[in-house]
Image 1 (cartoon, rainbow, N blue to C red):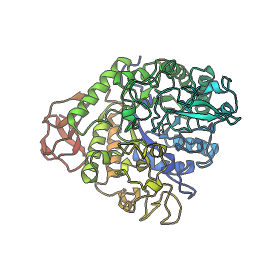
Image 2: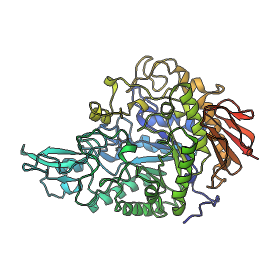
Image 3: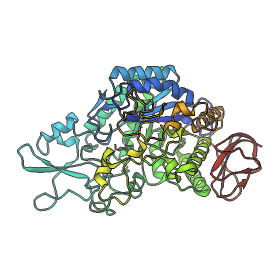
Image 4: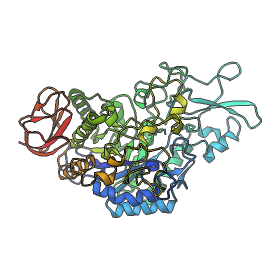
Length: 548
Ligand code: NOJ
């Protein structure tokens, strides 16, 4: 096991800042209103100058786009919407030239219903080897017209859809933990595991530096597919992925899944000596407890797992401190580094979660500074460096399958379109430099008409802008992130202050409502997320200091 505190010779991913590129909404090179691979390539210098170490690109493979790429029809090609394999190779080569690592998304839990395997399965009889690659079952009830069990889809409604057999009769049911166009694979069939390893190798051979593993906790389902005792399909859908993962259920986090990651670990390790350097994989595992998540990053499994606990914590110094303590305590026994994330393409942007407006933005910047203090990797979501808030997308512009499956029943709007609006690069009106379309022409999700001041162009060089704040924070982080080790001290401070000590840096965050006296350790100011402190730190602000 690597020594957790040994700062020498660390692989890049142990201290990287990773920028999530949601490809549809990052940069559009051809003016069709949808971001693409050449668009990413053209903006790589921006990412290098922002100061990130790596980018993670959401799925760009051949896909009918029913869940915007998380429904893969061909894992070994690029969807024409986004470009070609040659465009992907060019992007990778340019990223490497600029010193940026590239993580691609891997979707092993389910395929698209347009994948050749699923098409073959529905054309083949029950019990055939083609059907054995997916989770087909006979229905319950006297006529088989009830779903095989009571599992709900994460996107709302039942997790089962009934087939009409080729001869027109009602047939078997297939499992889909997400949309009905995303059938779950049968991981108890060895053919599935072999195929996924082959796909890993396909992208490793092309030179990718790592994988983000979609629904990493979902691959195996409990034997016998027992009913879940906690919800039934008639109940409202869970309000969020966090809630969906909040309880032990037979479809998540089954012990067999770890064998898969042991195998993948060996495959990735084979590439260690290549010119590209060490490869990695980060799990999206919404497992219930910190201990359960730690099992995915044991020394012979995946390298990182997203830690969504800060993201779901309330605005509270105590809650943040607890998340830090619990995260580090759970990972220490397995020697893994933590990850930190405030936003991604599945959740409401953090500026809005923290209340929106000037206060939400102030809190968002403060939380970012605190997060960037911590050891391990920080994952940023495109647009957060511009301080973007969640957009209220009109019902007619919605495209998210979870919106369609829940809009009539959900207690809470879980539609994710509002955090996926194409980002503004410059100009005064849509598409704000997102692509070469005519001024006024909207991209695939319309942009708000008050975004001119938030664009990269408007914020570059502007004193106090969120973009310049991120650039400075990332520049300073590079001076300590690699060498400061993985110890974090939670230091005493005034009530509502979070005081984090790491190496010779101290971060102070004021989550209270009144200015707070600075702790003794805060010597020389390095950077503030808001007004510079003078003796006291304003509410909703964080600052980095050289430690006394
Ligand atoms: C998690 C991804 O982040 C989300 O966008 C997707 O809808 C589901 N997995 C299903 O693949």
